[in-house]
Amino acid sequence: MTATARASLIVAVTRFCRDLRARELLVTPAETVDALRALEKVDIGDREEVYLSLRAVLASRVEDHAIFDEAFDTFAAAAGDPSATEADRVPNAPVPLPAVTSLPAQRRSGPPSLEQWLRQSGNGDETVSVPRESDLEAVGGRNLTGLGSDELAEIERIAAQIARRLAARPSRRWRAARRGPRIHLRATMRQSLKTGGDTPDPPRRERKRRKTRVVAICDVSGSMDIYSRFLLQFLYALQNGFARVETFVFSTGLSRVTRDLTGESYRAALGHLSGAVPDWSGGTRIGASLATFNATWSRLVDRRTVVVILSDGWDTGDPEQLADELRAIARRAGRVIWLNPLLGSPSYEPLTRGMQAALPHVDLFAPAHNLASLRDLARHLRI
Figure (cartoon, rainbow, N blue to C red):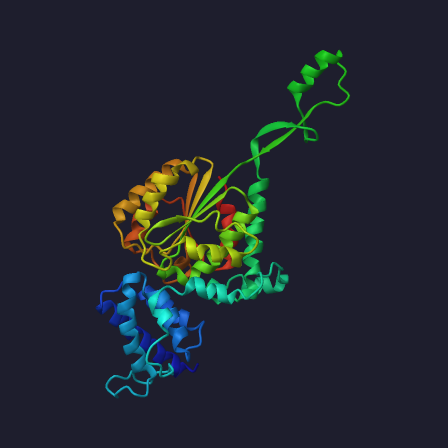
């Protein structure tokens, strides 16, 4: 794309975002930047791809979709529809969207993400092979939304590494063992009393394994569509490599998906999720979802538990409820980590009401937008 075309695209998208704000959608300058970045990853000559990418970023609530659709039709006509009048056109518009009067009915009627992911997975199971090291370095800093299906194996590799570290972490406490690194002095003294001081094979001991539990709560609302696939792939691999992981997803309500993510392949897990989560790609009520977690699943959290929340922080509910429920989790948990994909953007600031309410009760606020940020999670899970 030429510099002139890119400048015209920026003008068109900026005006589109202003139109959405005028229609009372939650669209800030940060979302405008993210919308432009999303368009860099799709074919801007394909109306459907442009529609889905912009809706995922700019329409965070399911009730916003009808308003977004109306505004998008105006945007598409002004950008490239030859039937639009000269007064309606955006000057020098670079987006040659096909002259399609409407999108397929299934795209308008409900969230497409799970069905898309299942189709993208192909007919067979996903690959588990690991790319060459040079390839891993090349994709390590790339945004998750720019990764291809062949590069998703690195997400599984990272999760497997974290799982091994969690399972192998030694505790400060010791236990009896046949071939431990240290002599068990008390047991040796007791044995010597029985044998008259002769202990040719003194008892040994080793460090106990630290049993850390991870509770992951992942946002699958409309505003997280472009990240949910990759984050859930990461949680699937982590859960299947480390038994002490409980996984929940939320949009307007909370769903426990630990059993649904347990299976022979990620594709099969997605098939289970499609029937287990009724409000997928809907609105966002973080506080209400955490209230459900505290009321029903609080027994899963203790001082050996790390609670990981993966969300962009867009919340249409009461921020005071979010603060209260997160405070209750923080009191019980060993650590609370909030991973926000938007934090990887240099221009992002946590100014939404949800993030402002949550941050005082979070031990770590970190990005989750690329493979490098997922690798960093390994050291953050230590308690």
